[in-house]
Image 1 (cartoon, rainbow, N blue to C red):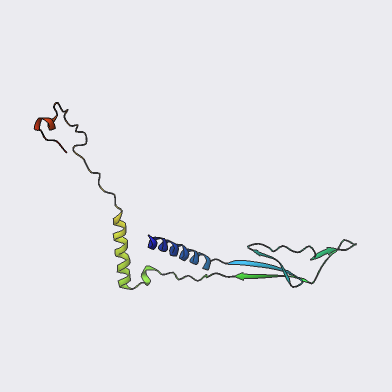
Image 2: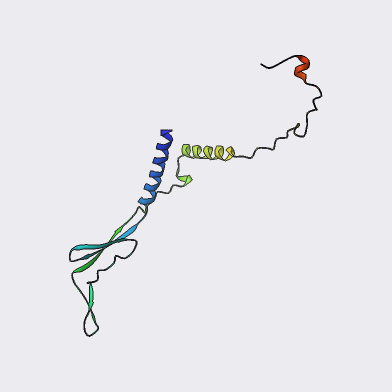
Length: 137
């Protein structure tokens, strides 16, 4: 029982490892005055309210104390793809024999004919146990 649970845990962990190692994503960070204000993954980080302000003549001025940093975390993009022809002769033989046996494993069985399927037993007229005086104790 414990080995089945351990096997399932490791299987899920390996699948997640492959998934996350091949996924790329971007992390946006917004700093204002050297202090981290917001961090966002897959979207833009929110700006602080004091980053831009309007003047009396209607123009906007941007402060120099705020800065945005984007970090791109790249996943693995070079996966090794092997063709059947690239394998050695012994490996090709193993793969071909495995495919042959596995495909024949799930063949449909012929429908079996049951000759006594529609046969009904005769009606009992007398109790045979009492007649032969054989009783199950």
